[in-house]
Length: 553
Image 1 (cartoon, rainbow, N blue to C red):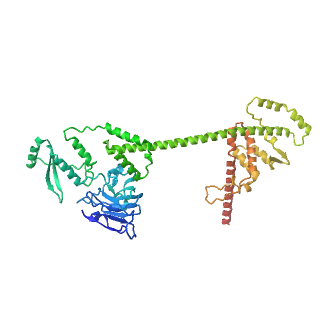
Image 2: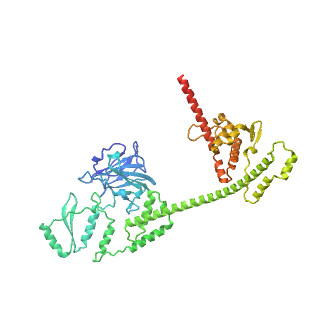
Image 3: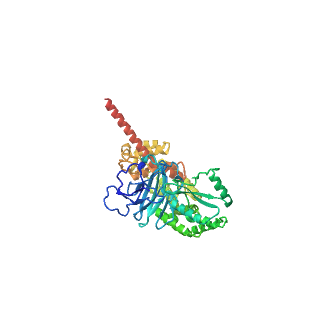
């Protein structure tokens, strides 16, 4: 294998990915402009070992690196396999590795597959969580397909190794074939078919002893053709996918005496369920970082020595269990939040009910007091004291009838009193209360106005006038529709209360439903705000007309 060892600034141009000569060997990646000895956190990459593949490393940022893989031998169009080590890491150092020159348009990385990782303290291969792996087409790298994965180093003294999938080396294959050959099995025969540049090519014959001689003769006489080796079981770049040499030897040792492999799934499933039940009290769903997922998965696999469970099945069950724990935690939080909201709403409803009942009582008392005062002042202000006393002692028959009807009902609704009898008339003006007087003729015109909106708007103009309304606002708060809006002075609160009282008296003549009355009274501010907007709009239109006349002149 061609080797390449260099420690320099990675910001300098190395050339395109087409001229990658060999694998990196103890290649230290330094930031651009850095001079001096490498420190902890300056990663050292190495791929000069059997089945290793990494041709170039570019330093993008402190946390991101672009990796270029070498193509297959004598076939530069295929670039898939990668296998390299990283050392000189810093604890809790987070990185993103981008393999930027993949040649495959479709990859299992899009469907949940993830790269493999192991370290010196945890020698068993584990998969990186699939949520940290992305496969996409990048226009910044000649529109090549890029596989990016995030990882967090958790131990400074460890050397980490990353691979496309489970590596299966040529040396491991030779050891396995040597082990089979030493057993001297009758149905197995190993022969040397030829030599490549440095390595031998083996011919394996697996058949019954009676047919072995006939098969050898037919092959030597070229009566049959030797079928080509099928590469369907090879993932990429000539590697063989296997879960480990120990599993292969275990299977062959069980078949050595001619018996079939009788490993049932009942024991495996029981072991997985027992393992998951032990972790029931642990917060597996709180594993948010890649190093925690790596450590927990590694510990879980080390504890399963007695149960022969396929790793894919174990990871799938573990992943589903973690998802269910996470969903259960979210549901519990949502239930607790909903319970608190219901308690708060119940308290508010209780307080609101008490306030509504208190408001009704106060309103009834106020109406009764108003009716008594209006009855006493009905014949004019110059009423003799004796007449008042006689009226208070001997009320009129109509009033007695009204009070008798009130006694038969649980809720008091006074008889409607004419609006003109409530307010004081003097010198052609009507006193509305709080020292507010309006013109008597306009007041009579207002009483025949149809609709609450028109009534409120006209009454506001009568009380304040258009000149005051156009420079005021109902609440005194600036509008949120305009960024630079300046708040205007609010309207007088006591005058607003007079408007509400007048509208209340008008509505009380039409209905006695408290809900309807409250709903109609709640729109007073809206009606006055609309009137202010209409006045401002008319003023702006008048200014435009004046400016147009001036321009024409």
